[in-house]
Length: 333
Ligand SMILES: [Zn+2]
Image (cartoon, rainbow, N blue to C red):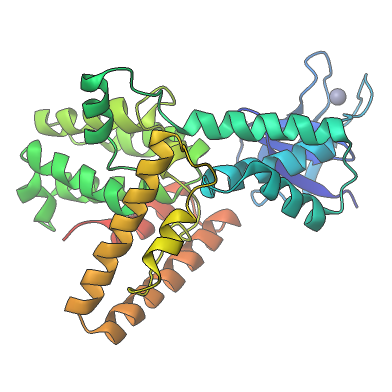
């Protein structure tokens, strides 16, 4: 049987690899997922099941050689994700760890090209450096969104600003139910957010001028890949970006370990400050609440969300059901 492997393309789109040939995703049919060879002149296509573990049909007549750079693409892929998740770790250290654990033979050329792509993808997640004082101010006011905690805070503030908090808190309101769903977006893989927003949320959006105002805010700032905070910054199919921490860990050591340069990019520096701030909030909250209960509640939530993510990844629930189940854990009450 053929081994199916999924990776992401340079642009973050899903690719399927079968016997060193690459296929791009065409779409879903009621039988499964359709894929087509990435070589434009080639007509080979396959259909896989929803979870991409089995080929249902295949029509293979490649008119070209196998791809030569697949191993590099697989390593580069996984590295790019790590480069963004661990933005303050040196690229070479990431590459060393990855190469050691992946058993892939890479040449020096490969390593250099991977390093460039790690820098590129990392750079893409950072806004352009501010050039004057007003730009610095704008950058700072907009910066509170680089983790899920701050993201939901920002969205919630805008719901209030649009005069929708009463609807939001009313369990019988159609508008309120719809607003709750939006909070589930941050648990999707970043490359699915735009589609889910358009296909699942905009199609059932209640007609109301305040809702339109809120939707415009979300689209302009968070949904499109050209927005100020594109989904790659805030959406991921895991809850590991949420961390709890014990207070009183050696502050200096952990703070300075955030940097690998003595002159960090201002956004890298600010990201470290924001993470410190989030950890501080969490520490303060766990002083105010009963510590045992808050840890336990977090664990229960983590396990529940992980199981929902698993169901979605394996195709047992649709994106709409996923949205509904996870949004429950992220909405403000
Ligand atoms: Zn082909």
